[in-house]
Image (cartoon, rainbow, N blue to C red; front, side, top):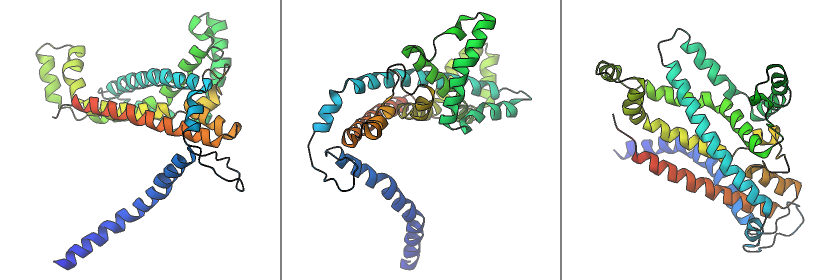
Length: 293
């Protein structure tokens, strides 16, 4: 008996041990070091001493006008992109779960943008907004294409949200497809026989039964939107006048362009707390609305 218990524990730590050690080395230790550096005047120069300065970096962050601008831009971008990605992802999932001959082809097509890196995607869409849309506006006269997509801050944030939706819509679609396929067909057929139209079936049956997928999808899109960096760096670079510089790009600029690594670490800690509070609140509220089948 004792021999079996020993073997079970050995097998458990044989599988869990390497993952746990890796997690501690690449997540826990860097996070603890970053938290410590946020309370110091760290300059990232090897021979320079590191002095503890208390909350001075955090005071500088909250007195930094650019940080406040980036904070507001990040909140607005996150709200728009989370809404667009989930609406498009859910709509695509409803489309590809219909009995169409091209369903598998459509699933692959919609998912493919997620395979392209954010930097490449940003530069491709920068060309589309600056060249293709301008040409379409000139040839068709449609006002949508002639909007100042990258020269106006409000439109530039919408442009970033459109690119993020194009990239992540197919990925979120896969989560909703898995949830939709778990709904019993006879339940939907019974509702249809009782006279429920498509909207009533979605509202009364599909929405409640895919609530778990909404919880997961909202968590993924909220956390990824707050951490958006590559599309922001490639598409707008913070222009115009750093009004579209999201928090992650602001942290990068603060640390590596202005060489204020301590202040950048303090900004990163604040961003971590922001993501944690918003994500945990969203998961708590979403879990309360879930329905067990």
